[in-house]
Length: 188
Image (cartoon, rainbow, N blue to C red; front, side, top):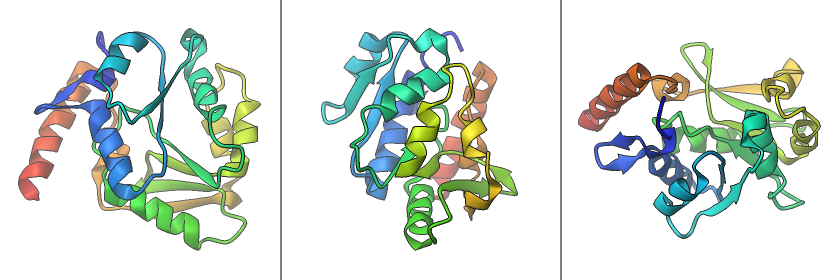
């Protein structure tokens, strides 16, 4: 992208603020933001009530950042949300639906994935016991190796927001999501 995705502007609101606001409105008890490249610059842009940790080894891969965040979770964590910053159009309602499914499910369900138009999306909500499996991954192994390992423990949660499947990897993606963001705001 050439610049930090977290700081991309959505009509006066940066991407990370969209993500954190959705979590807060959905009732997420605590958020941990993992910083890596340009950590100081990003930390200055965050609200003071946000807990941050720095992954000094961020170049090892995304999973190294995930593991840095997981290491900071309370030991008896009931569940946790993996929310990549490049999915800024996820709404608090999408997160609330994941939480509702998490609270209503049986013991076999450990992974809750939003689904739009039969496509898997983000963020992913996992039962606290899944932390150990993720921590055992190599820093360059994708988290999906654990998340999708056993289909019987996955619950797909249907949502009406295409934002759960819309991520930003390129400047063109950013422009497309910014246009979609503006369209979504006009419709509300």
